[in-house]
Length: 185
Image (cartoon, rainbow, N blue to C red; front, side, top):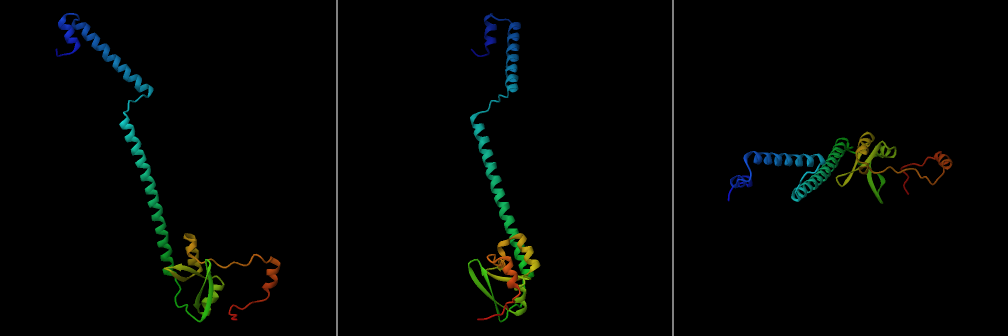
């Protein structure tokens, strides 16, 4: 009993060739209309496995984007650190050792540097700044300090600001009395 249903019906004599072709053509047109209607309605037949695969691919793409963004941020941070290191190395002041002690605050700790009088005046007038460098401190001029500050403010030791607890009138009054920087008790 091999063959299609139409072949079997033809052999039995219930259907002739014209009716068989006409029925086949109608069935083909009906299938074509059904596919067209599904496409118009947006009904795409997608298996559950394909949906899971699509979802997994989207999640992987999102994770890859996040990792890529994190890597780019780390590379940018390393590039800034390299720029700061290069600025400090090229603008670091040499031969500033001397007998004058310059005290400064690094966070909550008070540190001191032995500098010469010229360097001490530069530090007092903010023409020279102190930067953290390789676990120690380096002295750089104000131009280099501006470049460093644009890239990373935490490298430079903050400048001691004026005391705001005293009114402006009192500050003006006390400004007329000069206090020497080399006062030793």
